[in-house]
Structure formats: C-alpha cells, structure tokens
Image (cartoon, rainbow, N blue to C red):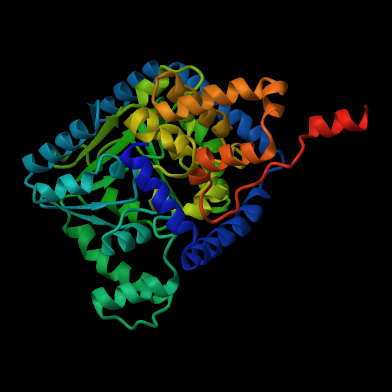
Length: 456
Ligand code: SF4
C-alpha cells in the first residue's frame, strides 16, 4: 500500500466512528434529500431529460477538438481572449503573469472547483496577490483555513454553531448569531472588496461553443459581482465544460439545479460573452482552458464518459462511503464517486488507485447521475486498469492467484476443514476486515458437503 492509501485508510476509520461528524453530515444531506424530491417534481419524464443530456455530452466529447476551436473563434471575435493550459502549473503561471502585468494586488473569487484543482489561491498568495473567496461556503472554509469539503457545499461539515463560533473568533460577533445575521455580516464585509479588487476570477459551469460565451450559475450573486465590478474577469474552466449551443442550457441548467441543490432553477444564471466595455481597453475577459489530465481520460473510449460530469454533487450525497468517511478523507479536489473515478486519471493511477476501491459498488451514484455516467462500472474499470498496469502489491497478487486456484476447484475448497479455512481468513484478511467488526467464520461443513449428504 502506498503512503496515500495508508493515510486514507487511517482517516477513513477515524471519521467513520466520529459521531459528531456523522450527525452534521446526516443532517445536512437530509435537508438536501428533501429539497431534491421537491425539485424533481418539475419533471414529467426525468429519465428522458437525463438521457438527452447524456447524449449531448457523448456527442460533444466525441468532437471536443471541433467545439473547443469553435468556442475560441467565437469568444475571440466577441472581444475576449483564450489561454490554453496543459496543466495546473501552466494555468497558474498564466494567471499570475496577467495579474502582475496589470499590477493587481487583490482579486475576488467566486466558487470554482477548477481553481481548487490548480491550487490557484496558494500560487496567488506566493506571488503577493490577495485572493478573497466570495461564495459564503467558500468564505467560511477560507476563514477556517480549510479546503472545500464538498464540490457543491464547501462547508457541509460545519453546523450552524460551528460557523457562529468561527465568526465570533474571527470577527468578535455574537456567538449566538443566526445564519441570517452571519450572511448579512458577510455581505456587508464583501461589498467593498468587490469594488476594490483589480480582477474577478470565476469558473464556468458551461462553455458555449456557438456563441463564444460562458454560463455561470449561482445562488448568491457573488459570481455576478466578481464578473461585473473588477475591470478584469478571468475564467478558468476544464476543456470538458463545452456545450455545443446556448440552447442546450434549457436542458442542462434545470438538471444541474435539481440535482445540485433541489431547486427548480438556481437563482442567478448568467451568460457572458465578452468584456464589459469593449470600447474601454482596460476591461478584459480572459478564459483559461485547462487540460490537466482530461485529454488522457478522453483517450479511453470506455472511461471518457466521466468527462460528462456537470459537478452537481448528487453522487456524493447518495454515496454510503462518502457519508461515512467524509470529504476530507479523500484528500483530493473532487471527492466521492466522481472524484474516485477521475482522480486516478488526472493525478496518477499508482498513487490514487485506492480511491477506486473505496466503494460498495451499490450503484446509487450511477442511478442518481443526471448525465447517466455509469460511475460504479467506471470504478471497476479503474480497478482493472490498476491491476493490468501492475499497481498491486506482491502479497495481493499472491493471495489472488492462490484464491483463484482454490475457489475454482470444489475439491480444493473442501479439502481443508473449517478450522484451517478460518485460520487462512484470520491470517490473510483480518487486517483488511478491521477490528470494528467480527470476522465471519466458516461453517463446519460447506453447502456442497451438506447437499451431498442430504441427497446421498
Ligand atoms: S458524476 Fe454525475 S452525479 Fe456525480 S457530480 Fe458529476 S454529474 Fe453529478
């Protein structure tokens, strides 16, 4: 087992038995579950909508090169600028260079997992540029010095009281403050920042090829202000975010809202095609298109459907593993089932293969996914890839080889008595089974032996 896998297992065990954590997650996910039931009522035929979305994504991924060039051409014609980044370092370097050229010392950011993926805040800080998160959940985790816990709900692991205590500690406000008071306080704090920042950095939920624009969806309006107030708007988006047409939003926006938060529609939905004032050369809009391992995944015809993900977070919320071990245990930007599927391709199979094994394969993630990604099947494909690339331990190979030999032969299975079998189980599997549950015991006689005796 590599170091990451060892740490993962240790933390998973610790968090799974943390009752306080379980209570908070169960409470927050139960709120989400209730909302989603309501949100889905807007659909007469949800399955058809999901299938249509999956088909559009499938078609788009098959011609990604064409749509990306179409996006670049149209966006450039609109007056915007496109930068291409092969990896995280390149993306950060380009953004830092741009900000330095403009002598910008402060940026406001709206929620974007892609900026988390490239660790943009760290790079900005290292270059003396202050980066302020303006999404409430992101603001809370930044204040606490933490990373987002969940791809849609960054502060899901915090209770109301945790947040009130944090604000009391940082801003000396009343520890009994209500969520409404905390939100109002944050709003007043951030208003000036939007006006003072030299640049606004956002993600994009979708890139629209036919009109050369980005689509951004959010509930707080901070994204709108990050785009509108500063003179420079930088968008960072993965290359898989492309949709062929602005008309596709009719389908994708409600699907994302319903599965992400249980809303019929998210509150603020913006389509932006160029800088605010094209006549004013001091305003700019730049889109950084990020690869960072995505084209490697695109090469794999069976696994590429993972790139259809619209980051709604629904698969995390239904996953029994995620609910038990929590977001931080993954130690990855993208967590839960989709994170376990894509991270090994984006950051290395050798170091991250353990994630593909962190699944009960119950299929709840596949069932709930609005773009019909067969997540649990992709986890199995990852496992197969890890084995075929030789990333298993010699001890694992030894056990699997001999277990296969024995289990294929009835004679060999019945050759050893139950006490020997129990010893084998104890010796080879007890540590994996863990000390929180009792190792099962073999019966004295196998089913096959009992059957033969009864039907003698
Ligand atoms: S894999 Fe599907 S369910 Fe999971 S975040 Fe992506 S779109 Fe949502």
